[in-house]
Image (cartoon, rainbow over all chains, first blue to last red):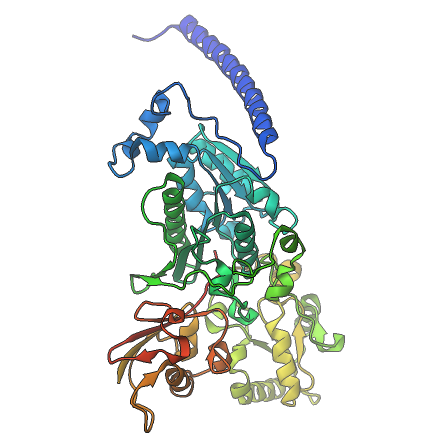
Length: 462
Length: 99
């Protein structure tokens, strides 16, 4: 039966009226939720954990009818059941970093019913995050990761409390933020943050679920849990900065942090629900290429540990004053370093270089990036000699210069320019070239990044 | 003595990107056992192809490298004085920071 024109108009009106009512109800809910959040954050004081109010005390098992239905597959597990789920609903977990590790961890923690879930991140969502940071969607590119992650968690489970900490974790705010949670998950991507979070957990007595991933490998362990070791027991001295690779330099297969992040959620769930044996005093090593997971026994708490050892003087004040960037010789943010090794007359900008090409200047452009970088994209007619093999391949530079000089028929000789991805390795290369007698070698300031930014906006960057 | 040596967390880059090495090491002259101290110096001279400072500091491994003898932290087995047996598996792994 086809509705006539009047019916259609009536139905449309009814839909509009219902939508208005829905919007007004949603507004009321938002206002009430804001009030509730205000009350709960008012409860936070002296570093104690505020109680989670999501649990209805009137029910014998502490779970509402909706909760029973939502978490029924957990409740059906004999080794998990009502008690563990109830523990989970009363727990609070903080995830530091909403990136490759934090994405899957947050999704599972929100879904499983952690009472209060906190997210710390100061970054924005970028297109080159999408392959591994699966909590974010394209619609959020350019927006804060915390906002994007909170929206995704809320869409999965609107019954839990989600707290957004849109700021970088520092010694100045870490104690206040971490003290509001029972369990901390380290899903960050740099050495100073890892030391800072571990030390803060020791000072506050919080268990720490620590995961890391790079390339095709991952690592996972639980620190500071029931007398187990802390990060500093294992690594009392920070590694040299050259040993700290970043995903943005070395690459990472997206699913690898995904696996480690899921395992971090699992360990946090086990601790929060008081089920099973957390991975304390043991470390999980994951090698994606050979499809091997190895679980090894690691040392216990060290009596000599500077932070958790017997005679430690490390306390909250000490923590606040500690300089983690100085300690590890690397920045808390993951932004790449900007070196300045050369005199100004040994450098030219990408725009100047472009002009010199346009003027037909006789020159050789050496690209010192690793070969697999060069294969992604390069400037036409450049010569790829990776920095690591530059010294051994100097004859190639000499013959390229000679060939260019003959080709152009110049008397004064061909110029020599060096480029890399960001303008750091190119300076190291020019230093090496100067030492080996190529006095006129110059680097292109800011590398291919500046070329893409200032000269050719269509040049693909990675 | 036959040993399996494994490198991970980026340390494999120091030995031509090969992670697993099945090696046969002769006992040092006059010695009746092989210790981790000797194995480290052997790895440094006979296995590592580049940047030894990324693997060792002094006579031990550099900070940030975990050493596991048969899946157990060498801190628990005696560090440099750990005695190795035939067919032991020694893993050298650099701690990761990425995420």
